[in-house]
Amino acid sequence: MLDFSQSHIDRLDQMCKPMVKRTITLIGGISLLLVCLHMWSLFAARQAEIDGTGTSTANMARALASHAERTIELGDAVLDEMVERAENGEMAGSPDGTPAVHLHARLTHIATVTPQIQELFIYGADGERLATSLPHLLEGSNADREYFRYHQTHAGRGTYIGKPIRSRSTGILTIPLSRRIDRPDGSFGGVAMASLKLSFFGNFYDSFDVGQTGTIVLAIDDGTLLYRRPFKESMVGTNVSNIAIFDMYRTMGVAGTAMRVARIDGVERLYSYRKVEGFPLVVAIAISREEILHEWWIVVVKMSGVVLVALALLGWGALRMVRQLKVREALEDQLRRARIKLEQQNEELQVLADSDGLTGMANRRHFEITLGAERERARRNGQPCSLILIDVDHFKKFNDRYGHVAGDECLRRVARAIDGGTRRPTDLAARYGGEEFVVILPDTDLEGARLVAENIRSAVAAIGTEHADSPYGHVTASLGVFTARPAQDDCSASTWVEAADGLLYEAKTAGRNRVAWRAAEPCIAEVAS
View (cartoon, rainbow, N blue to C red):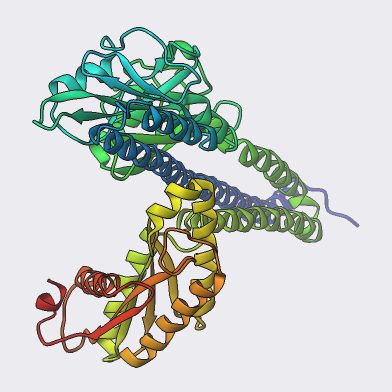
């Protein structure tokens, strides 16, 4: 007979309550643990997304700075030639006008083969146009231009980057690069000006994926805006020194990455900026926080849905919970794959930042980092380290005769010949600048380095590129080989470069198309001097 007395019901209630509490506590603890793990995973994924994008934008900023540097350097080289011709009296010409005609043809050729250059002008001391790359010499004075007034009052010979202007001849927005021309007595004699197409920078910046609300900025370091994507013509030339990137530039130095709210449109973005080496320019790239985290929010919704389902199914048994955790693991694996893909893209951008855009070789920045590391390694292991400095003979004459396009192709061929002369994975061949190249040969004594240099010299000569202004009739190279033992003579890497440069000068003085070599002496500073 069943006992349904009140005392029996009370005993059953006393037995069930602890079990219910333990069950509730267990389920609550598991649920709390699951929620905590979920929140931590989302936070970690969010931070990884921001950090990965920060690395990506920093690499993009480095690539933008490298592009701006190369573009300005090209304009600088053109101005150098224009000033030299102007100060040598080539504008005046002979009575029949032949040199002046040649000067006009030269300026026209440069503007034609150089896509970033809009037009070239040489102005007299009164601002009148004396020479141009345009078909006809326009009348009128440019003495009212800001860059012209600058050179009137500044005796410096460096290249000046002026505020954007609209060309009076074509109506196109340009960035003026200018240099002062001096008379023989040192007084002001005029201005050489090369205008860069603003659209040239815009076309390059459009190749970067910065999302719908991302931005790219090119500005002078005093805050003068040269270009901003998205482009708005009314902003060109305005002072933007109060925007986020200049706040960062003033506090963080030549490069940095941080999240900031833009004063222009109030959008929070992740900014990466970099000062252009050698020029008063700052480039920056920014991607909005919303677009950075767009994919992450999709993952948040998906993962949160999975977790909610998992919490609801905890009461139905461990089996269903395990199945839901497997779904969660699959989503986390998807996130990991996306993160790996982003890291691979970052590595590709790093390679781009360390490479020379013309030849594909390592650039000077990569060379200097590697040279310092190899010097330290050679000092520790007591092995020699050799350096080869290579210069293409009479390259300026080659450029003057055949043009910059042929000169670029010549440099690419020389680069391939140099790469063919370095066999080991530890060797590094890089473009040092202009027509100069450099090779680092770790664990290589003077004799081994000399043999490599001879191979490179022969390979360059074997290219067979015609060079009418060379005594050899084809493109050749001179090489300086220097071998150091850092364990014995603990001198700086820059001293190695100076010593190799001195030997290169000896090879060029001795007739070019040859190799000069020397090992480190007890006082390496004296060798370098």
